[in-house]
Image (tube, rainbow, N blue to C red):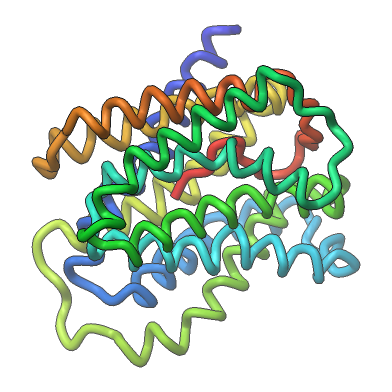
Length: 299
């Protein structure tokens, strides 16, 4: 990998590892609809000039149905559920649960009719990964915040399903204009609820910087860097960085927010990571270079 590729790889590992921290801070000061709207609207405004410069927005019109479906599963639903869940559980826990997305992706692909043979290695990986999820989620399901755990696992399902739509229906759609269209659609969806729950006064502390960082760095800049990484190293190698995201999420939560780091969390991380690597080891994933897909989706 080139030096530029290494830099882009490291940037993505961090940029899509810290959103959980920023979400956790932001939901302390604003409602979930306000957070999602601000994130999407600001990112749309930043990326729109780049999309207009290419003159490719008109090319999206014939594909509007799968684009809407992709936006719903990649942004509209999961970003709401993530913010809602982090009102009750730590950002570290959230990041680790989302790490199971590659495992869920394999299961979703099979449910959607994939003819790819799993094989013993991938079956073992699925089992190990699901065991890691069970180790992580069991204490919360027994008496902590079971609804929040279910919400994050639903996010993993959304992140696993959205790339299937992209791979099947959006291979020829330019990535940046599609991203802007999805963000714009999400902004419209949450505009009304955001206005209805808008805070009476500006929140203090780190709330506004967290919202700004989430929109600018973890959304707008993230997609630009991601597309650059794809061009540099290819779509399959570009997605390897997502295996580092959970470690970044846990480190950020523990160091900056003082969240607990327990032995079950460490064990779950090892199991989920090992399971994800094994479950996707032989996968022949269809990943168009121009589509913003995620092997291990981030917030």
